Amino acid sequence: MKNAILAPLSIALIALGAALAAPAPVDARPDEQKEAEPAETIDRLILRSGKIVEGKILEETETGIRIMVVMGSLKAPATYQHSQILDIKRDLPFQPKPVASKDKNKGKDDYVASRSDEEADAILYVIELNETFGVHSSQTPLEDAFEAADKYFGDLDRAGRVPSELRDKHLVIVKLDTQTDPRQGFDGIWRTEDIAPVVEDQLVDKKRRVIFWIENAGGGASFLPWVSPEIYFTNDGIMGGIGSLDDFDIGDEMVNEKQISLRLGHAEGFAIKGGYAEIGPPIIRAMARQQNWLSVRWEGGKPIFRAAEPPEGEGHLWQVLTDDGEGDNEDEFAFKGNDILRIDSDLALKLGLADGIADDIDDLAFELGVDASYAEVNEDNRANKIMEKWEEEINTAIENISRNPRTPGKLRIDYSEIKVTGSYTDRRKARGKQIYILKQIRSILTRYAEVFDPDGTQRAQLDVDIEIHKQEQIADKNGSRRGGGNTRGGGGGGGLPGRR
Image (tube, rainbow, N blue to C red; front, side, top):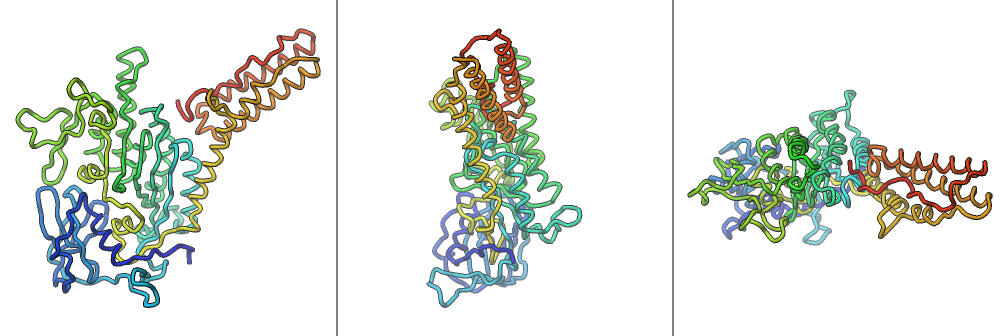
């Protein structure tokens, strides 16, 4: 039996989870909160995410359906957008499902699930991506983290795939509270280009369900969730912060537009792979450039986009998500107004990007359709230990090799303080120290190349610096010394981690 912690599931949490299943749900009415005898028939919503919701439909509008969710003898109202719903089955025979049972030896608010962890509806393996995306959350530790999850589940068949009967039971949750360095702007996408294949390997090759849970996905990190068909937000969740393509300029307008189109093509590709071919491209374009308008209206619960302001006289039919930020439309702070599109949880639900909202693991379990019990991998979650170890190593590396003038790395400082003066023996020792430090820096860059030196430029410069010091040493030995002070900068490294 896996060493997972079986999550307690109380009646209060079930009701709360049901309420949080809806975009901006309306509070339950007093008469809806009464405990009543189970209905003889029940309605079933089949969501695009694969989740099944059962209950009695209370109200159906142009934009969504309000349903009294039934779990055994428990009830709670929730609202779903039509864009979330794949099919509706009405007036089906009602069959109560088992729910958590109360342990008489525990307090009134303490409940224990009625099944063991092996019999749970699902096992949730949570991997957290925090701090700077592409630096502290990179492809190597993420690949190792997924491998740890694979080993924990032990469910891959001979073809290296998760059997169909286990795909709804063994779930990997990737929780995002991360963003790329803001100075990278839209070009943070290149780190997603490196990291996305690790997730796609799980989704496509291994057929594992990988679910993204967004607290903050900023800059280049905002592209990663699009590769998965299952995305959830926290109530305060935000995706965006990439609207810098208007500032892209390498001196030639035609080349600028080609480069911008290239970048947008890469970004839209993530959305198309994840199954968001209809909503992805217009949303991403509006997120990327301040000059782009995006308006939306709903037909049959589905969003209809317009890359312009609403037609004259039809403003009441459309919602302006972002304007061009020009003239009267200019906001004092672009990312706080609507000059640049950022997606919050409510908008993500309405647009069909998010499948639900969940602030904690209990809410997420409910959103995923775990009716009675689930197990969360906790103490044995080696994946997060891998991510934490990588974060510590990256922070140590930055402390040693940073070339930030305000906070230079220890090795950079040591190198800069070496003076090649004095006797020949002193000079030889000083150059030996220089070479030794440069080799240490190169070793760190090699170990974490994907973060600090993806194209090898810095290491190539270090090789040149090391060779120069060696030649200086030979010349000095032969009596043709080339000066005494340390005039070299220590081998490049002035760029942003992972920037191309």
